[in-house]
Amino acid sequence: MENPLEVPRLGSIPSLPPVRLRETPEDFLVTEVPFDGRAAPDEPTGEHLHVEIQKRDLTTAAAVGLLAQVLEIPEREVGVAGQKDRRAVTRQWISLPAACEDRVATVAIHGLQILSAERRPRKLRLGALAGNRFRIRLPGLGAEHVEILRARLGQLAEQGVPNAFGPQRFGHGGENAVWGRAIIQSDANALYELAGSPVTRGESPRVVEARTALREHRFPDALRLFPKSFVIERHLAHAGRMGLERPEGLRTLPHARRDFLISAWQSALFNAVLRARIESFGTLMLGDAAMKHENSACFLVEDQGAEAPRAARMEVSPTGPLPGRKMLHPTGEAARIEADALLAEGCAWPTTSVRAAEGARRSLRMPLREAEVELEADGVPCLAFFLPKGSFATTVLAQFGIQDEVHGE
Image 1 (tube, helix red, strand yellow):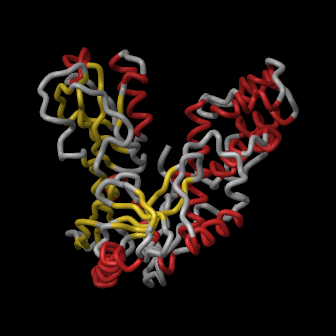
Image 2 (cartoon, one colour; image 1 turned 120 degrees about the horizontal axis):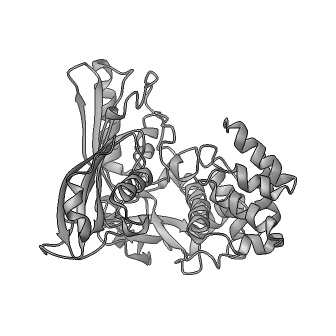
C-alpha cells in the first residue's frame, strides 16, 4: 500500500523556507461552525444542554473524558459534532444531559473553558456541523512571503483543494489503513501479526514488551502491559487468553474501533484514486459519479457538456470511492481509472469483500472559502480559511509544501 500520509498535491508547490508549524497551540486556531451558525434550531428548552467549549492542547476525546469525570456522567451521554486536533486552540460544541446545567458553570479543568450553554431538544451527533474556520500562523515565514502565499491561496480558492484525507486519519506511521485492510479482507493472521510486530515510531518499552508477549502467546502478560488505548491489541490478547481461535478474535473486534480502521482503509483508497486524477481533479468525465456540493447528492454524468459549466462554478465535482456495498459506481473511462488505482493498492474491486463497509462517494475537491493571508503584528504571516465538514486543514497546508504532524486522536 502506498504511503497514505503522502497528501496528493495540485501542481508544483511554492518555494518557501521551512515552517515551524504549531510552535504553540495558539498558532493553530479552529472554530467549529454549526449548520446555521448556532448550536441547534430555535427551540429554547429540551433534554440536552449544548455547551460551547474552548480547549487547548487537548483532543476532543480527552476533553469529553475530563468533562464526564468532573460532571460524574458516563462518556456515552456526551455528544460531539466533530473531532478536533490536540495541538491547537479550538472552539466546538458538545451536548450534555440537561441535568448538568447547574454544575457546568462551576467546571474547572486545565486547558478547557466553558464559553456558553443553552438547552436544546437533541443530542449532538458526529457530523452535525457546517464546517470549521481555521487561522494558522506560519512561523519561519515573513512579510516577503505574503504575495507567494496569496497567489497560491487564490489558485486554491479558484480551482478547489484536493479533498484528500489528512494524516490524522492514518496514525503516526500510516498503519491504520493496513489494519483496516486486514479486517476488511478477514485476514486474521495479518491482524495478529500487526498487533505483535515491533514498530519504529518510538513506542514505550512497556508497549514493546506487550507486543512481544502477544507474539509469544503470553496473553495474560500482553493484556496486563497494553494500555487501555490499545483497544485492538487488548482485544486480541483477551481472545487468546480465552482460547479463541484467530478468526473468532477478528470476528469479535469492538465495533467502534473496527469501523474506524476500516474507514482508514477506505480513506487510503480514496487518496490513491485522487492521486491518479490529480491533474484533472475538477474536470468531469463522461460516466463520472459526480457530487452536488450543496447537498452531497451523487449522480452519473451522462451529458459532459451540460455539466461542465456547473463544475466550473464549483457547484458539482467528480468523486472518488469509499469502497463498500452501497457505493455508486462510475462508468467508462472514469471507472477504468478508478479500478486501476484500486488494483494498485491491492483492492481488486469489486471482488474484495466489503460486507463490513457500507460505502460512499467523496468529492475529489473541496471548496475553499473566506481565504485570506494576513500579516500579524510580529511579522508572521497567517492563513485564514473556511472548510466544509469532513475536510482537513492539513491538506490545504500540503498545497504550500507545509508538512503538518499528526495531532489528532
